[in-house]
Image (tube, rainbow, N blue to C red; front, side, top):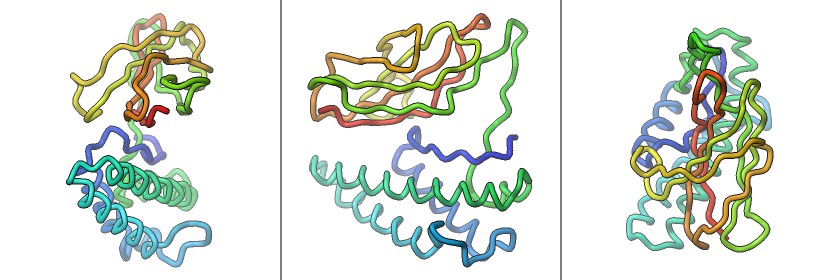
Length: 214
């Protein structure tokens, strides 16, 4: 395991996300390795619990399948995730590469990359984000370069991103810095993931990210 915390939760469905956040909050409550108060702007446990309650309220409201309430749930989940990322950065700083300390936080630890015999499995890029494209129905993906990559493969999904059958090939690109996807349906939520392809074959998928197409 690496002394880095997993701070992307896009592949988790709502039930698994709730379980993970609950586990993190319980693990950090009265944790002697990371005692409160934490310095600003690190969110306190009270602030995290409040953000979690806002998300849970939005989640229960969204069960009516109302599109507005679903967007509110997604916004609340994103806001809670941002706070968890802030906290994770602080925890890594305090732990100072101590995986034993980090294992008490409730966050998952990043796994070591297993190398193959033909050049090795390429890692997932550490920077991957999406934004609306230049016209309606398009999305621009930005992918940080992976050493050894010959091209980048992109897949998209609608529905639950944790269901492998939902993923469909979208495109490949020789350069990952700017990848334009076209022909998407406006006002629909899409999930995206990308992996580098090298001499040893396909690399590791990024954690999925989502975006409502405009």
